[in-house]
Image (tube, rainbow, N blue to C red; front, top):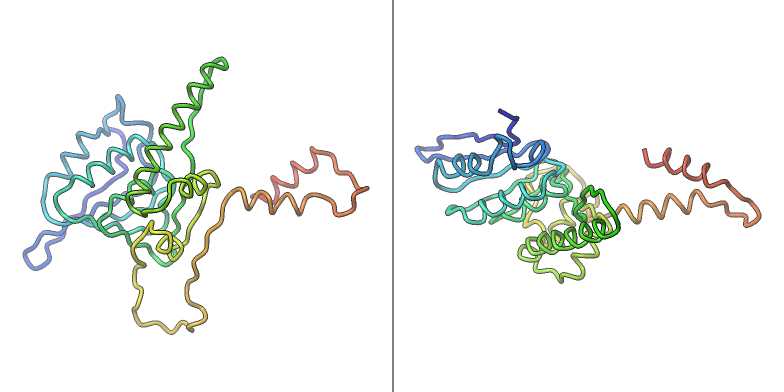
Length: 236
């Protein structure tokens, strides 16, 4: 049987069963088509108990269709679903996070959203079909973000285009999360050192790197191969 990317933990708190779902690592090793890590198996385990559940997420993402099915199952689940982002909810994992009745992020966690990606082979018509398919997949992903955040679809689209990363506070500000774990607990941290809402994008980082690569003197010319080499070094 292929490795499952989820694990259930059952706790007995005062006679009341509490279940925790841990999503750790890549969402599906390959896809959910033809392998043994099936949606039916996940649904069976999800519905094997009742009551509210907590979902811990630490994942770089993975298969968008697997994520969509987990999202739907959690949205349809009868109990409350509390999502806690442990360290990372990126790409398809951020879609699953949107199924939470309440979404909480660790002060150190990050969330990332971007456009769907695929690999296509063929002529120009096949490439066009692949592009159209990706556009439709993007629209579907945007539905989940829109339902959770209430944000304008055009703005969501721009954030996805840029491959946007949010820290915990920015995710709350934008509506992707509802709160921050451990917030309000006693701390010796100075008030001016409190977590700030920060967001950055791949586009912004790339543009910033390029400005450092381009010579300031107009007469100075650098071969394109040298620019590419510098960019690779700076991006590692």
